Length: 437
Ligand SMILES: [Zn+2]
Image (cartoon, protein in one colour):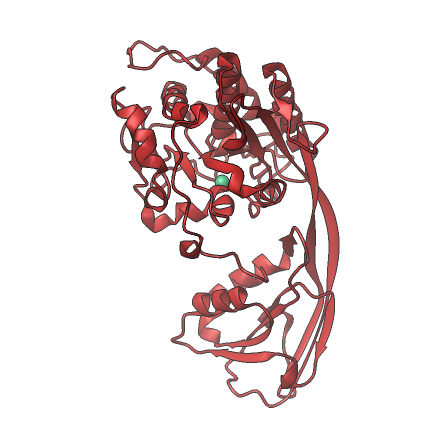
């Protein structure tokens, strides 16, 4: 991977005031996307280096830790529950290991009668994804007989579940046992399973700029600083580029958070409290934002500006951004009132079929009613670098990224001043998370 970086020439004059320092933006993203951090995977010492860097930046900017925290580092544990042993005999026939999969939040169980669980059959023509998804929403204990026509999808689920389930709390006790078989009539059963439960530490980095006039009202700026780490099985091969640098995803958003903090701290006249959060573990299930959302009263969060992948020109042109879930609150409309006079605007998510509203940390806060949206410029439908080792600094357009952050600084001024208050998200319209996996 090429590490050379030319600071982009900004020959075109755009309408924006120079709120954001291009130099400091470039410095931050250069470090966060560097090979030194080995792709910032959750649970590694490399991601801690990123956390320490962000924390140091918050310190020099003059933020203070969140109430109840001693530092900017908000650490917590997540629980991993992984299958340890699993065996099944259906109608007197032992099932081969490859044809059985489990997602379980139970330490161990042994099912010997059909009263122990509910039985489901997924036939050749049935929608396997939909059935498994709805069992996950319901929770409880389920045995699913899956027609062998679904072998490929079954193998996908099996691989995914074998890595174990990550949970903040073990609040729901349930299990889905999947058996790949052409058997549709269950006569006798014997299923036993045990799981391995381990705890691992994760860390968000959160800093606050207390508001002078409306300190209880919070405007949250966020991005996720974790990424995918090092390409599995290829580590140690010095010839190949094996590091998932995640320059766009989401060193770019994290850099925006730091530099917006720097801008608003320097300005020093925020009426509302501003909270700046670099979330961990977005890529493995959004655990950073989930833990964070339990450490404050979400009713106090006036808006969440989550920044995801702003490192390259959008479909609408360089420096132009769009937001997810625009129709779910009037935040976008309010921001556009500030932007239109500057010749800029926030566009609607051009990829509704990709469900991006649910694919970042904003969804967690939206489930609690917060007008929480992700702001992005990615062309996800054709970005060859997305979740590839080539998502590195050289693939970014720093001038475009700078313009997006400038736009955000202008767009959010009304929120910061306490002049605009967006409508809440209708919680009943937001898809819930599953109970088991
Ligand atoms: Zn990602």
